[in-house]
Figure 1 (cartoon, rainbow, N blue to C red):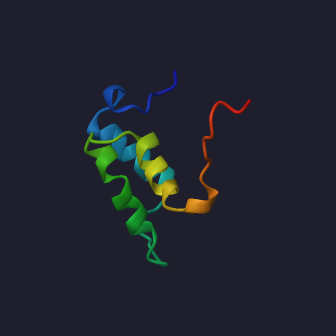
Figure 2 (spheres, rainbow, N blue to C red; figure 1 turned 90 degrees about the vertical axis):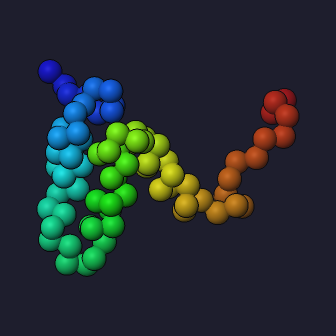
Length: 76
């Protein structure tokens, strides 16, 4: 049976394990970036934000204003 990832489907301990397993060995932050990644997911562990929301917010920081899609009517 597949375990869910939504906050409503998991306990805090399960969310900690999901983040830990996904990021690998976060204590071995030899390049200094892994600790920042672990911090990024703290709101998920605390039950404040879903993984999807955190990932979307992270990726939004890499979209330049010129790259954002524009909407000019219905496209016809």
